[in-house]
Image 1 (cartoon, rainbow, N blue to C red):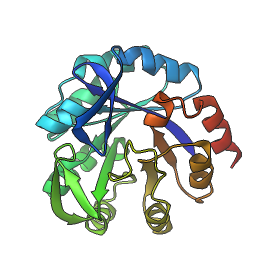
Image 2 (cartoon, one colour; image 1 turned 180 degrees about the vertical axis):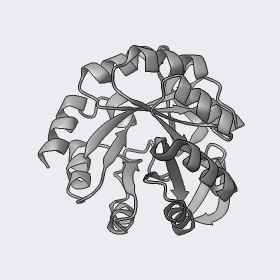
Image 3 (cartoon, helix red, strand yellow; image 1 turned 135 degrees about the vertical axis):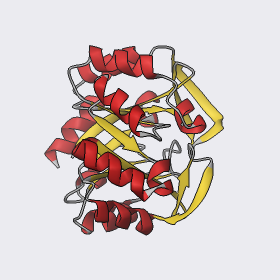
Length: 240
């Protein structure tokens, strides 16, 4: 299991939200690139970036920052937030992004998902962001009519290989991940699953690493609040 540090960008700054609420923003730094270099230096094998303004508005707003990070790092970068059309996917990949994360559009359009997967293959990841089993869209500001099962079935039918599952009620709350739901998704054995949301301590990392077949975990607030060291988490995940 790989440990993936998260960099959430809002108005050019590194921030974290509580449960996806833009009314609960905490700023951790003014330079996302500095954090990206820090995580790489501490052993990260990939970086997870979310353009929060993009997620909220429906179009990527921090392309220059994302591009500068990709150019500066030797490790791969995955990016989500506001990616709603083919041209944006193509631009991100051209600018150095390794994986593009589709969220809202995964709910809105099966045709779009089929199209991007047909064109870009395994460089497409689907983000399943759920609260009370309903998938949220538009930067988590709205609930869709789709359940987690609906989206995972859509992903499986199209052939997409990787999903990120986030329990919104736990995101930024440091209350621990939704182990039961993650096990259910991993047990399907149809897609690679990356966990996100609620990671608070090394014991959470240990519990996740014990889920046989779980591909990775995205860690955000716990790192920024210095709940544990990235090197420790990477070591523990690899040992398990």
